[in-house]
Length: 222
Image (cartoon, rainbow, N blue to C red; front, side, top):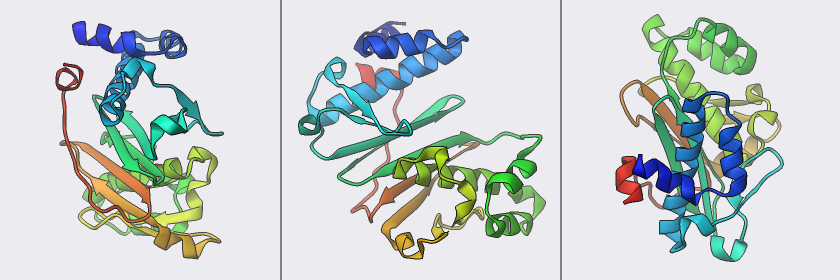
């Protein structure tokens, strides 16, 4: 409880108001804790007090630090699903992440036909049945990470570019409709943050290295 209160105290009035507008308490808590943890992590990177940080948002809602002088080239992105949240930070490169809890969905095959490309659907349905659900989530997280990195979010049609999705194979951006030359400008990385979860990271350009950490709320706040 003390950690939750500390995180809540770092939020802006607008963020507290946004949290309070969620109908269910669990959604209020997830938003408040997620944003509070983000502020604490950014504060550590920048040597700033978490409550002093201000955010701006792109046309489709992508967050960034409002003060370019404070930002110092730092970019970040975040995603959450079920009981986990994923945060990514990089210097002077656009970045996007997505995490999903792997769970059965009654309509996942129909959803894939609606939003995945023809090439991705062909690959998906060519896999053994026991691999298809994980492949679906691989595809979804990689596509989400890419469109979040570019700042367009779901305003960018998901069927206009192809990603790899086969379990056990490396994450790759394979093709972008009408912009084939842009493929080489983007780096995709698949993640397995915990059992029954998949995630993906998209960066504009090749990162020098990727470092992964796992924390509890107590370790971040204290």
